[in-house]
Image (cartoon, rainbow, N blue to C red; front, top):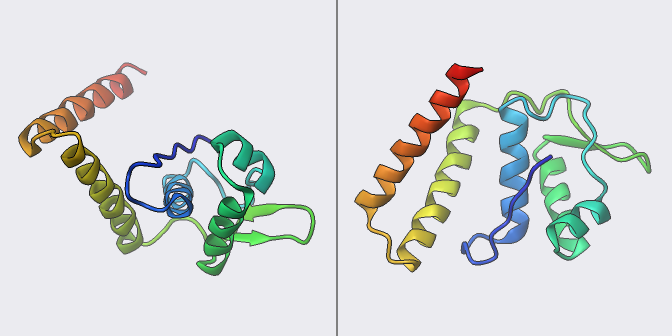
Amino acid sequence: MNIHISPSSGVPIYLQIVNQIKYLVSSGQLESGQELPPIRALAEKLLVNPNTVARAYRELEFARIVTKRGTTGTFVSNTGSPLARRERMKIVTERADALLAEAQQMGVEIDDLIDLLRQRADAMKSTVERK
């Protein structure tokens, strides 16, 4: 499970984790019944406080994206996939807001950012077509 956090994004770290796990579930990269990493293991990997990961997992459980099975772990719930279009758009909007905030902080113009997104989309499309 690949999760990347950006402490300077302006989005709380626990929300970055929540949003990325929601994305992984909605895109099918995390499937129903699949176990999430233990809180401590993910916290160590992301170099964050375990309480931050625990808060993210609680938010995901509250949203019924994941379920906790006693002491055996946290798993993607049967109702967690796929997310409704509205939820997917909410996640993408939050990620876009974070990207725009970071670009503004770095002095990147919106037209340059749009060009970059188009270039990256074309590169991704080319990679998928070659497979």
